[in-house]
Length: 75
Image (cartoon, rainbow, N blue to C red):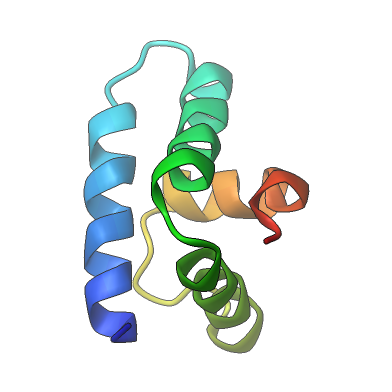
């Protein structure tokens, strides 16, 4: 999948959960959402992107969630 589209979709997910009052819970829910609804290949692409590009263009909450919960996002 095109990385630009993945970044856009991921940021939309992050934007939704950013409104949660508890940011720890929001971070966990972002990771759960990605695990549940994204195909393993999409998650792998996102993890590689974070490694290569340091998450350029990703919202802070999304990047934090991916790095904190990397273990559950592994395909």
